[in-house]
Amino acid sequence: MLVDTHAHLDFEELNSDLNDVIKRAAESGVHKIITVGGGKGIESNRTTVDIAHKSDAVFATVGLHPENAEFFSPAAEETMMQLSRDSRVVGIGETGLDRKYSVPFDRQLDSFIFQINLARANNLPLMIHSRLAHREVIETLKAESVNSGSGVFHCFAGTKDEAREVLDLGFYISFTGIITFKNASDLRDVVKYVPAERLLLETDAPFLSPEPVRGKRNEPANILHIARKVAELKALSLDDIARITSSNAYRLFGVGEIPEKGKIVYGIRDSLYLNITNRCTNACVFCPKIRGSYAVKGYDLRIGKEPEAEEIIKAIGDPQKYTEVVFCGFGEPLLRLDAVKSISIWLKEKGLRVRIDTDGLASLVHGKNIPAELKGLVDSISVSMNAPDPKTYAKLCPSPYGEQAFHAVLEFIRQSKDYIPEVIATVVALPHLNVEECRKIADTIGVKFRIREHNSIG
Image 1: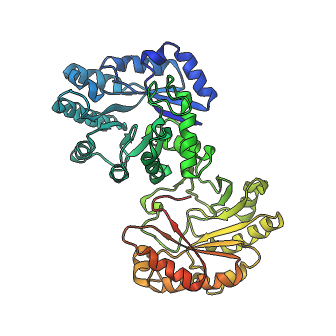
Image 2: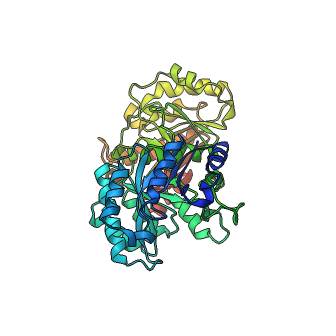
Image 3: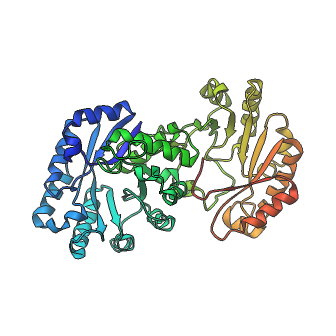
């Protein structure tokens, strides 16, 4: 399922054959569309809401575009307040600031602040428009104490630094067909930078048609081209991007695909991942779990009762369509050593490649040489080194073992080299972390080294 989180179905270009537009969208896998209010003035919100009531596939937002802020008035406030309570309304906007238009900036600002407060009063997300006014938009949101997760910056076309500020505020970022344009290489780099779990898709139809339909009328069905480009840039499959962005749309707007809770088996690209525990030895400061998030690439990995090995094997079904099976969830898999071994035996009998992602503390925790017990069962092991020295490790990855843990991780990597064909030491690219010192340690031990992106898991 794909979700077009921003289209203007009330515009004549789409409204003239709206039923066909919605049908073509469904045929392209776009089953939900958010049509955005206020793009043609305050009264256009009524049209937008009416459209949402005529189709189960369509939802609406209510707002006043900064281009139309000259029409902001007490009457406009009343209209937006009334319509914001409608059952088909899932957001407020698009609203924001725009230096391109001649509309007085103070009028835009008054309208923007009203809509921020309207969103807060109705517990609805904001649909932010920002053009040539990024600094003012960010400062206004901060001044109005907008909470994390309060909305999306639509049609994002800014820099990586601007994207970082948006993400730091807790907002989502939405991309349009602009990312498919030949001259948009810088923006494609921003797409690569934004974590998939904070990314949304939109057409902004009838505008900004993507390649290969550029120059023609844009419509929600064309979001498929945008999704394919994002998948390419993220090195994910189209199914992955559809699942992730639909899950994101659901978390923000309540529109999209509801993630199934407690996934114990989940596929990403051509790999199958096994989530056998949520328990960890460490409480790493960069782990999303610390912030209460168990979302990975559109999956909800929060589990209650840990599944037995037989339950995992049953959930795997036929693993032959995958190139590898990976023990990697929201916990440390080697805390369940017996389950890992019995499942791996079954997988190797099926001829599968097996990989483990681990914190490297299993030998310390169990008091024995764990890699030796994995010989012949595991083809690759990825060990989170995460620091160049004991003090930094203890700070980034707190555990009951203190600085001793770092030495245990290095010893685990050395042990793994003796028994497992491929050993990879990894670090998360945190600000101010001396990654090159970590690389030198891996080189000294004689194992591969990989840098993992911060805030990007799976």
